[in-house]
Image (cartoon, rainbow, N blue to C red; front, side, top):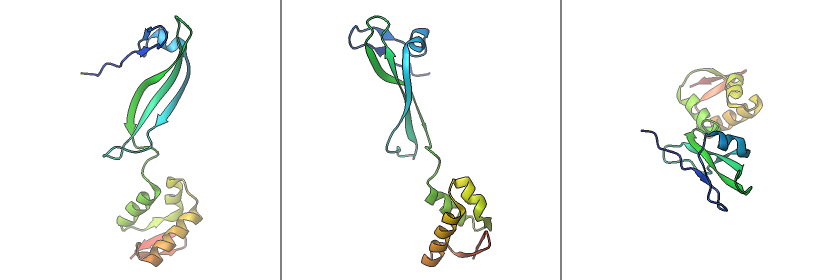
Length: 133
């Protein structure tokens, strides 16, 4: 059974506006996402859709939440993506991995070189390829 959303209540005149109704949609003046600064215990981040309404009865400004969702925010960390790729122990194209992560190839190459020197990555770089040991 779906949990019913609490109505938005005007603090000035106590008018209740049900989320998703025409009154709600007609009186929204601004919307934005609010991302929780810390993930929950499962690693999911809560994203709350916030909004501002103009009360149709008294004209007061009302701020509140339209709804919430959970999910991975911008996917996994770059460090985790690199570590997962290295644990696969398969040859990979550095440029392709860099593109999928949204980083520059040169930066990823420097990171991999540093990891090899520190011993946290076992393998070598030949051309644009990382070859695991």
